Length: 112
Length: 116
Image 1: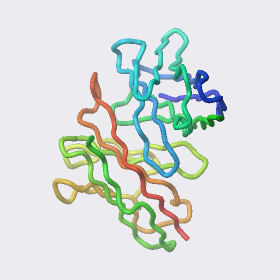
Image 2: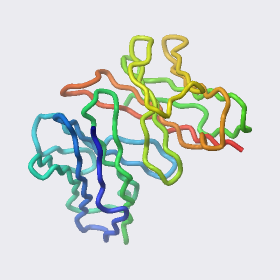
Image 3: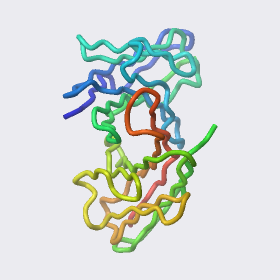
């Protein structure tokens, strides 16, 4: 069985400061992990994915995430937040091809 | 960049009516999916589809739901007799592979279904 826990339902940061979104997963097998972002009234956009290659994954818009098997974590970071980063972020795990399990989401607010 | 297109973006229907949600996956993708997100809840898997048949479905995907790929481009989700609890955002997704390095899912913008 696979599941995801996003540890923060809401994160508020100032523009230009780092962003950290925390995600822990559980999986019976070697999982694939993803981060998706959803801007208001938009679809789910893939930020980055881990599929058993390098443990530090770089994504779009300056985001990156590190897969830590010992901690069963896949936290998302960005060194400097931009106003356009305000959105909802979903951590997603898949150890069953085709079936994704989503976290509850983290809403990011960016203060000017 | 290739996109998954969903229509309509919003649909309001009366309880008991049939609805068809439409999706055009990315043209060279082979695997197709439907997910839904009830307001305030997690995104949930409904069904996966490959080679013109259902690969896997969740317990949510009961007999009132069906999927079809009627031609080479469209992928549809039909809800036969809608209930109030079917109100949700429905996302279509497609992927070129089912697993392995390089695979990934592209999601559409969603159809917001409201059952009244």
